[in-house]
Image (cartoon, rainbow, N blue to C red; front, side, top):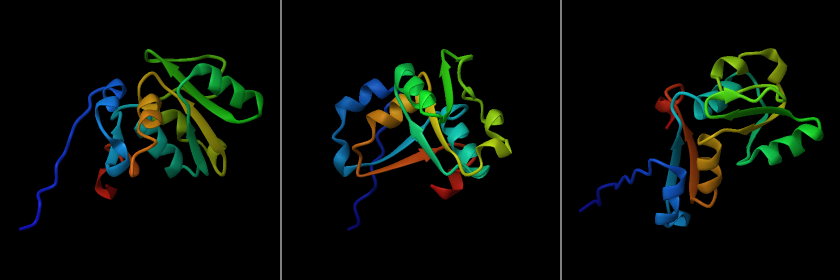
Length: 130
């Protein structure tokens, strides 16, 4: 008999520590912002997205000339190029670029799940691909 798939839900990146991820497929979904912004950036031609957990990491990439999106508590940080709204990534400016992104929850979840067997980004904009 075929084993039924099992789905575990972690509502916060802090809960990932309760799971053994190396044998899991993890789908990180921060529906309205971070993961939707990532999907939109790829749709508009971004070459790569580098998620980082902290503002300090984002600042280091900005100093190296990267385009950087940064948000904390729903607010775009003014010293960076983008916030976490998908609308901000609907621009030719990102075509062929590597974008660095840090957000309050979404990119932290991606970083927490980086040791998963497979890591996918989920959003309403790409749910049929998952």
